Every structure is written in structure tokens, then in C-alpha cells.
Image (tube, rainbow, N blue to C red):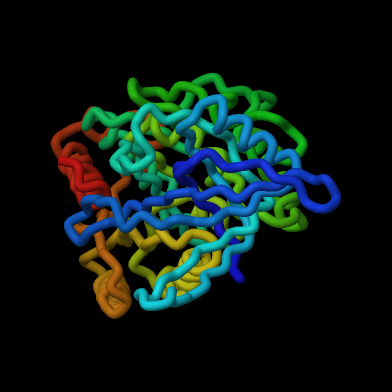
Length: 381
């Protein structure tokens, strides 16, 4: 068995039952459709899979009540998953997808029929690398700028305990204000919607991180029980339909915060440098992404590899760029082009919270790189 977190539409109103001890339970048929990234960067709906979800106790009662009250609802569930292959008499081989749910997320009504799988939802990308100083937050900053200039509704989630992206994308967020830590903690009732703050540009919202609290919650997640990996995924489902793009900025680790971020994502944005230590650490990061895909998030893919702070005129830069390009090609990973050159203007714009498009001609040329990345990652021009 594996543990999964999925979101889908109820195919029908489930029936509430009682076991021999008088405890309520139900079986819900949930239709789940994944979004699949194509080679050209666009997303299409994949096959719809029906999950038979067993729900126990008060969660069963609440689910049935919500379905009877609202009719057509969308739920997030997490639990142990098992696939069973069987062949009906005289029929073709089939697969039954069963989940014993230990957590059922908030119920939301749907205006469209459950058979309609074309609801517009945000593309979720997680910027990650266990090595520090490679420019993850800088990349997220400039991708955010490119996206808002393109008219996209953007949510940035600061999953780095250092809170760097919060400091440059928001104004006047105090250390005592609620943030991502409150959403992930089992000791607070806050939802994503409760902690979102406006960003510095129109069309941008931020889930902030300030102070020491996210580091504390990270340590709590280490010893937490089942479903810990899917806390961020379940939280984001409530607001995913409000945005076109959700960017998650991670710290230089492969800890439970990063696992949560990858479990929530459609794609991993791997930010690396053309240097020895960056190339050596890439394989470990890709192995982690594969493990998350197999255990928690079947839709997860590597959305793109960014060669950041590239020094094309140095021997080392050229050599390690070639090594990383070869490794990406061998694994079938999309390498975003062109590489981001090492330029002080990129770091300066981030620290000053201004877009490269607001700078001189050289800065505007650099801004065009991130515009191109946005197209490659989302398929949007």
C-alpha cells in the first residue's frame, strides 16, 4: 500500500451506514482528473479515475450531510491506497482504486456537473534545491514579476523558514502575524485564506513566513502522524481556483517542508548553478522528487531545470553546464533556456523589490529571460 492525497468530485451522494458497534461509515465514489504537462509546456486533462473511498466516524457523517445539503461537491481525501486488478466474467481487465481515508478535507460546492473536468485551476510549481545560494528565491521573485505583468493571478507561498521571499514581495508584515506556519500546524485553526496578505504588485498575493514559527512547525512535522506530507496540498485546494499560478519557495533542505511543497505541486522547478557542488547535488534532489511522486503525488513532474548565475566565459561554467545538460537529457528533463547569466542587476532588483523591466536596457533583456521561462513552464504567452 501507499499513502496518497487526492482531490475530486463526488460521483453520487454517499449513503451513511453503521458498523456492528454503531459507528458511522460510508463509501464515497470520487472522480479525480489529473492535469498533465505536455512537451510544449501546455497542460491538458488526463484520464478520470474513480476512487472508492472508505470514510469512518464523524467525517463520514459530515461528508454525507454536506453531500445531501449541497448535492454536487468537491472533496480532498488522504489515506492508504490500494489498486486491485480484476476481470469480470466475460469482460475486460479492470483496476479498482481503493482508499481507506483517515482525513477528508473541506467540502466545496461545484456549479458545474461532476462530469465536467475542465475547471480552471492554478498551475502549482515548487522551486527547490537542497543547496543554498543557488537563487531559488530570486528566481521565484522574477517569475512572479513576469506572471503579474502577463496578467496572471499569482499566489506565492513562502515555505522557507528564513522568510526571504516574504521580505521582498510584501510590505509591513510583522513577525507576530499569522503565516504558513499557522496553516501547517495542528495546533491552530488557520486556513490559507486566513493568512494571505497582498503582495507589492497588483494581482499578487503571498502566504508569508516571518519570525521563528515555521522552523518550529517543521520540527513538529518530523514526528507528526499520517497525512503530514499532504497538509499544504490540502490547504491549497481551497484557494487553487482563485489563481492562475501558485509558486512555492523552499529553503535549502530536503525536509518535511519541502516534501509538503512537492506533494502540493504539479511541477518541481529545479534551480541550480553550473558548478561542481550544484551538479553533484542534483541527483539527490531528483531522487527525492521521484520518491514523492511514487509515494504521495502521482502527478508531480520536473517542470523545468534552471541554470542560474551561469558564467559562460569560464572553463568551469562551460564544463558543468554541459554536465548538467547531459544529465537532464538522459533523464528526459526539460532544461529551461537560455541560462540565467550571473548579473548583479538581478540580485539588486530582488533586494530593492523592483522588476527588471523597470531598469535599463540590459536589465530589460534579463527580464525577457524570465518571460520566456513563464511561457515554457505554463504554456502562456
